[in-house]
Every structure is written in structure tokens, then in C-alpha cells.
Length: 397
Image 1 (cartoon, rainbow, N blue to C red):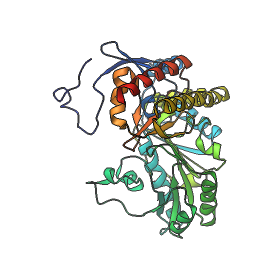
Image 2 (cartoon, rainbow, N blue to C red; image 1 turned 90 degrees about the vertical axis):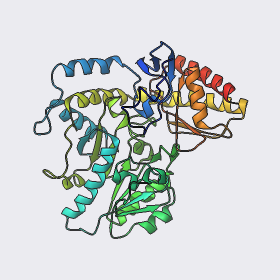
Image 3 (spheres, rainbow, N blue to C red; image 1 turned 90 degrees about the horizontal axis):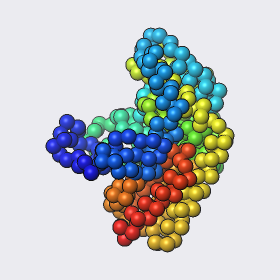
């Protein structure tokens, strides 16, 4: 195994803690390192590789598009961006789309759009954003302010003004936070970094009514929950609650960097000429791949398959938990699964998984692991992955 030591990492800033092996190639839900060892990928690049690695249709799009047009800037239209924006508006509540390169950027754009919308209406004081406990929206200055991690905020102050925090899944708390100055209620329908914590349906419905009653906007951060992860194209569809703005990234490009901020026609009026932009946002290569991803994921057969695979994952985890007295709780929202260990530390277990040839990731809790595999992971890959999972358990207890 190739070790990544302090010498050959000196050119990289030390803000990540990567595994001690270097991936060389990947296909479907298997990754091989430089020495040929294979790993079953239950992490999915943190909910990114929604169609697995090296999907033949995505490979074909990359080859064809890269031979024609990579980048022209937003001074010019490009066909893939036009086609993808049309597809997203056909498949969702939205009428308009702004493209960026990540979920972080998509969330920044959403907040800017909400504030600018009311500014242009002459309501300059309507600029506060209500956010929630347990939230994660990215690591820019705006998004660490909106998020609820003190660790991620430490040393980066002063933070931005204009944010008020309410308790997640507590409508009474949200009602106290919303005032005549509120521009938007900004929430993850399902909190990812906190460990796949679902908003309760009455709570989201209550937020929709609260926004309507106070003439403010409802923004859903679907950076992780969108693009089929929960068994519907977007998580809001499963709740039956439509936002005014939503953000998408992660699985949107299947591994190619892209983000999108989608909105109703009325709210999109807030972005007029020159008010916001992104040099690489909406580039032809990313949009061509993303269009293929959305078309594939939109298949009802595939979405039904997500739920069948979810049952298989959860069943395996429950069996192992009972056998080894492992978890205090298992939570899932489609193929987005978290488990809280009773005793084992997540960091130690993840390292044990690497040794056994399995990739999973950690959520925010010290004892919480997270899985977000390919939405089309094969049954044989699931079965082999859980054999390795059990070996890692035996090595950890």
C-alpha cells in the first residue's frame, strides 16, 4: 500500500485528513488503489457519484463534449446549459435556473437572490435569513454563518450579520424567529452532516404556511438530498411541500463539479443583468454530463430501485447491529444512511473498513458513520461490502 506521508503531502494544505491509500481507477461501485487492492464504495464521494464510477453513458458524453466545446464563458449561450436548464424546470417546481460549480456556491446564490428580490421591490429592511440548529450549508463565510458548527466558524470571524437561528423541527421556535424583516427561511429538508435527520412533514408544511403568511421566501438546501438520493428526484417531492428557491449539487454532475440554484419566475426577477455571476458556472462540459445524469435518474424504475436497495442496506445493518450490539440508531432517507455506534468511534471504524477494503464516511458525530452509495449499486456489491463491513466490526470490538 502506498503511504501518503508528510513529505509527499507538503504541497497540499493540511485541512483534509485523507486515507493512507491513493485511488487509481474505479468502475461501478469498486475503487482500486495503486497496488491493485479493491474497495467497495459505500461513500459515493459523499453523495456525489450517484451513478457509480465510470458510467458508460457519462463517459460517452464527456468524450463527445470534450472534443467540441469546453468553455466559452457566460458572454455566450451554450447548448448544453440551455438544454439542462430546460430539463430542470420541466422536472421541478422551478421556472428559472442559475448554474454554479458547487453546493456552496449554489447556497450563496440562493441567499443573495432572496435578499435582492425584496430589495428590488423596495423592501430594503426585509433581509434577515432564518436558519436552523444542526444545519450545514457549506464553508464560505456566508454558509458557515448560516450553518451551526462552532468548529467551522472558529477563527473566521467576524461572521456576517442578518441571520437568526431557530430549532430544527420546532415550528414554535421558527415562528418566534420570523418577523417583518425576514427575507427567507433557509433549511435542509433532511440534514446531512448532522446525520440524516429528517424534517417532520408537519414542520415543513408549517414553514411553507409561515413563509406565505409573512410574505417571505422558503429555500430548500437540497445539495445532498436532491437528484434521486431519497427515492424521489428531489426530497421536497416526497414531502409535498414546494419551496420558492432550491439548491442542487453533489449528484447533479455524477462526479463532475456543478451546482444549480433554481427558483420560481417571480423570485428569479431578483437576478438582473450583472447582479450575480460565475465564470465557470454553466460550462458546456459540466452541463452536458449533468443533463445525462438527470435524464437517467428521472427514470421511475431507477427511483423505485433506490427504495429497494435502501431496504437491503437497512436490513443488513439491523442484522449486524443485533448480532454485535452495535448501534443506538439507524436512520435512512433512501440511499442516504447514518448509524450511531454505541461504543465504537467512527474514525477508528472507518480506518478498519479501509483495511478490509470498504469505503464509508463520517457524519458530524464522534460515533456516527454515513453511507451514500451509488443509486444503482449492484446487489453483489452490496453483499460483498457488508461482508467487509462485518470483518471491520470484528476487528473493532
